[in-house]
Structure formats: C-alpha cells, structure tokens
Length: 549
Image (tube, rainbow, N blue to C red; front, side, top):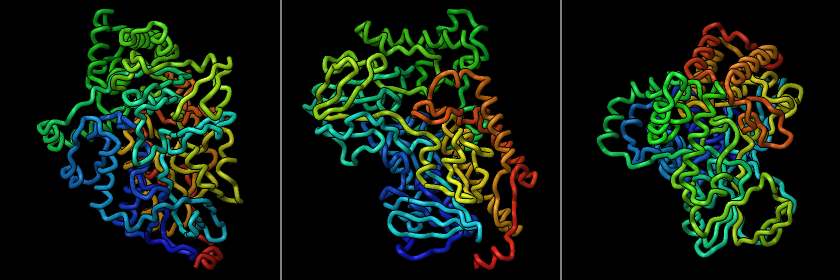
C-alpha cells in the first residue's frame, strides 16, 4: 500500500480495479509513460472478477491461451496453462504471476473502495476519496472496474429474514462451502449457476433449482493442456494473436460456413454436430454466418440444441422446462459440463419461477406465488449482474457542474467509442459500454483500450493539453452506430443484460459494439490519427494553472 490515509495526495493518474484492466493500465502508465499512478482495489489481492467469483466450477469459456495478455512475450513464454479452459484458481494465479513479474503490487492500495469522484473545474483535476480516508487529486482518472462486477440480487420481500446460510456466486467464500448433507436452494440458471449446479448437486442432500429463463448451454469440452499443444501455442503466439484480433468475436472459428441454406439438411445436422463436439462457442459463433441474422436459420440451430437437451434429460417434463423458446444465441451462450445430466439425479429438483414467481423469502426458505413453500439449509443467489453501468455508477462520479453520471445516462449510456463521456473530462472507461467488451476477447480488448488511452495521454502531455472529452453530438452518432449494427442482428430481440433488461427500471439500450474488434480498433485509430475528431481538447487557462499549482 502506497497511498497514505487522511492526507491529500497529488498524482498523475488514478486507476480503479486490479484485474486484467487495472494491472495493464498501471504497468503502461508507470513503466511506459513514466507517470505516477495510484490504483485502488476493493479486494485484498489482484484478480478482479476472478478474485470474487470462486463458486464451484468457475472457469473461463474461451480457450486459456486466448484469455491472456499478449503485450509481453516473456509472460507468454513463462506461463503454461494446465487446461484448455482455465479454472478460476488458475486464472487468479496467472494474474498474481503477472503482478509479481511486473512488480505492480506496491502501487496498488488493497481493501479500499472509492466512495466519491468529483471533477473540479477550477483546476481541471479529479478528487478521489475512499472509504479508508484517502483523498487523491489527479489529472487522469481511469476505470478498470469491469463490466460484470456488480451483482444484481433481487430485492425479494423478506430477503434478509432467511435464517440459514446465504451465498452469492459473485461473492463466494474464499474457504469454499461444504454442502454435504445439506438441503440447498439456488435461484438462477445463468452461466455461473450452470457451472456450479453439477458440483453442488454432487455434495448436497438435495438441491432445488429455481429457474426463470432456461439457457441454450452447450458442452465446454474441457480437458488437460497437453505439453505438445502448449509448446506449439507458445511457438505460434504471434499468428494466433493476429487471428484473434482479426476475428469478429476475438477468437478464430475456422469451420464457420456462410449460410445454413447452402447445405442440405443432412449436411447441416452433421456440421452442427461437429461444432457441438468441438465445444466452447463453436456452435454459437463458429457454425453458420447467418444464425444470428436470419430467424429461419436461427430456428434450425435452436431446435438442434433443444433436441440435445431432450436427449440428455430423462424426464420429458423437466427436459421441456430446460428448453428455451427465445432466439438462439441472443443471450450469451453458457458452456457446461454435465449440466443437463444433473437433472437426472434423484436429489435435484427444477422449479419454474417464470410461471410461478417467488413471492417472498422467509426464515426457512422461500414461497412462490401459488403459496408453495420450500425449505432448505442454504440459499444461493446466482441472479446475474447489473452489467456495464452498475460498476461505474458505484464510483459516484460527478463531472462538470456537479452532474452525476447516473443522471447524464438516465436514458442509457452516452459515450464516444465506449471510452469517454461528455462532461467527464479525462475520465476513461476500459471496456466501457458501447465498446466490443464482452463480445470480443476481453484481454485483447483491454489491451487495445489501455494502449489507446496511453497514446491519448502521451499526446496530451506532449502538446500541453489539459483536458479531453467527447463532443455531445458525437455521442448521439456513436450510439446510432452501435444500435444500428446491433439492430442488423437478432440480438436486440431478446431481453438480456446486453440491453439492461435484467434490471428493473434500467433504461433499455444495446451496450455492446458488434462490429468486431478489428473494425472497432480501426475507428479508434482513425480518431486518434485525425487529431481526435469528435473530442474537445483544451489547454488550461491561466487561472486554472494558478489554482492547480
């Protein structure tokens, strides 16, 4: 810990978060630009989402070697992944390895939460305050809080009355939980729950799963990383990274075919079967190019997955409850291992809460709308996240004229490039809303954002620029670009956290740029090369310089 409490510290930059984004941002600011930077992290260690999400079965759903930094050849060669899809513990160890390798921890203040972030127009500086008494004044303020770091736990009546053990997949105890001999209820069947449920079921005396919306989950097909494969990857990291950056979703899918209607029905079934067996996102993002654009093509793949579910679940009624009825792939596709077979166990029950919603939580469990009651020893919430905006709002940002970010975004995010917002000068968002973020390769997307931010800061320092922020009009144009691309696909037709529809009262707005990482990077690079068209760059006035000094 470097930042002293109860004193005012002046520094060049403040970064919030010590996951992938915060670590690379700190390294770049400090070791490449030679600036002073302070990092605040709520946890007591690095890791970001991989520090908190320690639930049983937590792991990455893209290949390990793609889910890693590319900026350091030394890191790439020294680290070896043990599995094709890394588990939470291994990813956390990887981030610790990177932090130690680059000697980053001494510049991170752990167990500290930012409670306010105020822009001072007299000085063009941000004042950051924490829950431990720190006050830091900085020129550049950078969010590395991530897109899925604020849990969305429904405020059920009586939520705090349950007398048993309560857990959330997004904040799992570090010591783990032993469910042996216990009755367990879990609310939610999203990606985290789909990973956790099979392992919890192996321990619990009985597990009751409360499902609102089923998912088109497909097999992960994980396995050990063989030494020969690891060595081949290390020998070809350069081409592999280039392929990933060029791919629409941040990972190559060489077996993608243009249209499902170019194949015979028999060929279609065989190709879908091959993609299913390849595992991961091969079916979702690597089968046919028209699946996420054409409803008829989509229906064919949707029924293929539903038939797979029916074949794996013994009870027909349970199988149908597990079969989604919305457009395939319009929610982020979870990857699973033995998830559907779990419902064949005698100690697992599935309860539909879409037709019969939860009325209240009580001391012993919960009650549904029809007054059915369920009792258990442990209750688990796996109910998703307030994605994109939730983590940013927790910073309590106030920009020019004391404008709160929540108020400025009251009809949805307003950004240019998903990087900055008008009225909040020098505040940068790594993988912010309206950038490729969760539908690209996150580490590579983070690297691209960090490097763009660093180049922008370097430009400002070289030219005596004091502030940068987007023009308000350009934010309208960028939103039209983001939503225009999204509306050319099927994704906005389903209520998802991509649009904020999972949070009551949250304005609906598609928050992911779907044009692909390569196209997005080109736009960002062109903006910088044009002298930051669409941004307002200002030098400090004499009075601002006097106050700041």
